[in-house]
Length: 239
Image 1: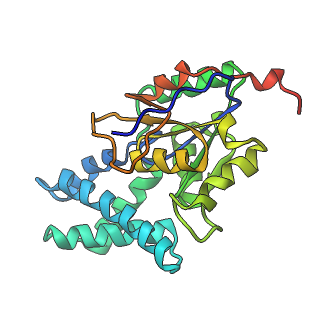
Image 2: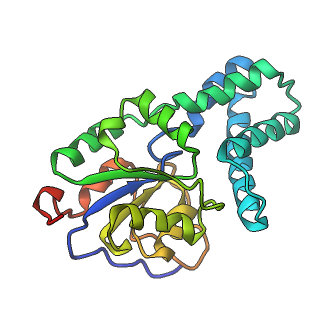
């Protein structure tokens, strides 16, 4: 197992969150899937997520650019076929619409509000398309708590391509080491670590560390672990 990096000693200046799985529960979609396909909702939700991520990686590796929405829809169609489920147009549209209304994890609003109270800038850096992010952030009532909301769209790549992580430093005008990047996806947290971000992996399900020869700066169990880091208030920083 690789040695764990030491936590930063200087105060960090901003936080960037992954969206899907970190702020918003992608597996909450299994509830709607269960209503449509009794007995198969959880399996559909898990396989759908796996294929969605696989298709983003294939898109990046091949240079065949697809939108995140396209990768999501394609993943749903594959998962339904693999499980032998009759996914008609109405069911497909209903499940895709769920991505605009994903449930935030219970503690997230309180943590985002506390960061704002402390004067810490908090934003999103996500694979999601801009309209998808606008919808899910707005539905959760988080719009006033997150700035910037960054989509990888326009880079022609998905995470963990360095071009995607570079969007965050460019938008914030900070070095990567001054920014805490938070993700519930271990591969994403490690990709951000390789880029140079200070990182926190939210390991909600007690999963093992991905065997990639690297580790996030810290590992936690929910978003409250963000507050264990030291932050410099943006109110006290020169523009």
